[in-house]
Length: 118
Image (tube, rainbow, N blue to C red; front, top):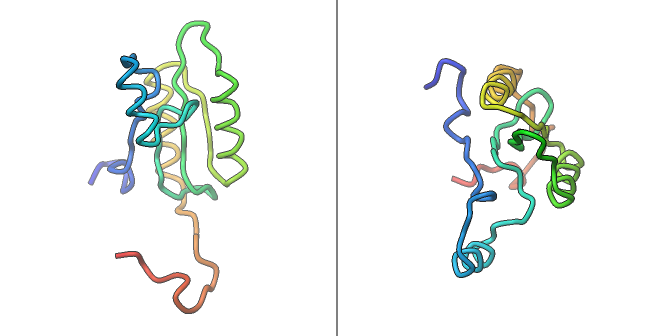
């Protein structure tokens, strides 16, 4: 386990922003790659949120309309979304997020609703 606690093992990056050939892009889209998906995904519930998504930018880059839509929808669904301009800011956001109190996801559900999937 990492010194910043459990959850870092679920951090993943999207392929958005990677230059793909037309054939590769078609395959990625068919496999479910979403245009505008934010760069880093941490599906761990902390600090009252269901997860953290980070968009990495550099220079004068701005979020595309698709990225803005994606961030807005995730926020509406209870996710924390942030934009970071360098890896140090992303690292700090991840550490701060993972060291927050775990979010309680179950509020007294009964029956099969809250049975674990595994």
